[in-house]
Length: 139
Image (spheres, rainbow, N blue to C red):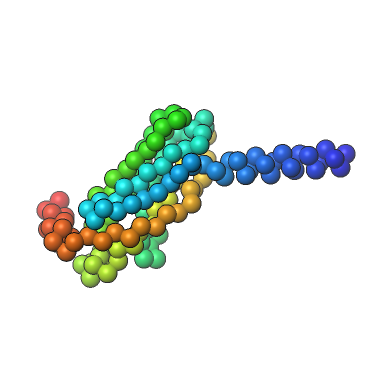
């Protein structure tokens, strides 16, 4: 009986280890204009969609996009063009250019898990930032 329980616990533990590896890769990069988030899932059997979430300087994560799962194997890419246009005042925006991203993986049964987080330093030129602020005023 003890052997069966130990084997069952071992099987469950191994299952959790493999389930935790949701992504083959998950990264965020900045080119000074936009931030690009890229990922590839290791398996999409039970995944219905991905929700990309962003946070900055002690702010809570907020959803910025939802992307439906296309089926394995697929690479995903999302371009965050408004990372520095978050509705904060100008002084906060100019000082804060470090962003954290994570992906909320929503399964077909509506349960969800979160990816690890990735950080990216987004240095935007002051001219581009000013132009972006002006455009935001007219939205």
